[in-house]
Image (cartoon, rainbow, N blue to C red; front, top):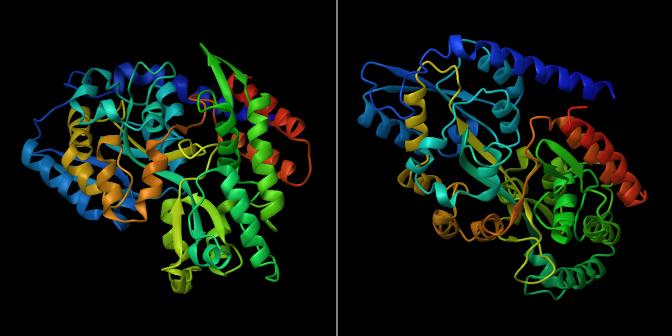
Length: 440
């Protein structure tokens, strides 16, 4: 288990360095947590190119509002997800950290534990809609016990079922399924209708898509303590709980009956595969519709533009969809920022009701109060908005969670999809993951 030891050692280095330097190099620790005194200053904020491509007008509106209020300018430095963790590791330990930044919600716990972000708990109430932040986003930016806030929710992504309306209709299904029982009945009809199509999947469920598989487990087990349960700083595994395995058995039955050719791959190619015409449904983020019916040059099929629809992944009953993993981004102020008060004020404006209302026309907002704006912006947003409003699940809130743990889950679910007993495969993954979470 060398990779476990290496991961723990790397984190220990970050923690030690942060602890040793925080008192002497924070640069502006005496500044107020929210500052409007910015005349003549310029702050630097790292934002992902997702916004540059998708909602630049929203960012520009926030910058203009901030400058009008504080007199300070904002240098937006656009970032990409590739190798971003490495860049964060370097910047957050240096004396040249940005004044605010965006990061993935699965990345936050590591930096919170390292003391890399300013504690915003005392000013949380100043952030609009903070009492209605989406639960999984809010949890990702909090301390493990949920009492302290270090990162502010920005926007979310929720997985839904994306399906071919034309294929379902041709099979006699004109009303979308709302329960797992209805889903199974409908998929059998679609499978029968297209049985002559080579490699046809009525519902494509790649074995390594651990987000989807775990969602079915959460649907039976419950959204709290998915994957692991914490008592203080000690974690115990829940992957082998009989109720969790019951949900995994449901997922496994669906993939065996209705999915073809994907037991040993993940979900990264499913949009392009669906665009080719031999897949009737996938489970993915709502925005993947735009990938499936996008330009042919990027693997899409524009001819499908009117044939795709989305619904929350059906669950045990019409009122309880299968819980979605709520991905997304958080925003934080580095502890070593030169202008932390101004950085925090920019994030307050960037997430206020006015700016989030504009953002909700493009992405799931950070709070439930504005979900109707997002859902009214497009019929395609209704399903992902419903999924985000419903109970969602998230990874264990631990600084020791890593990509290696995701690989453990991918390996386990791929093994299950190819015939391994679920309790055996999940037991192996659980041993490795709990070892990580407990710092072993």
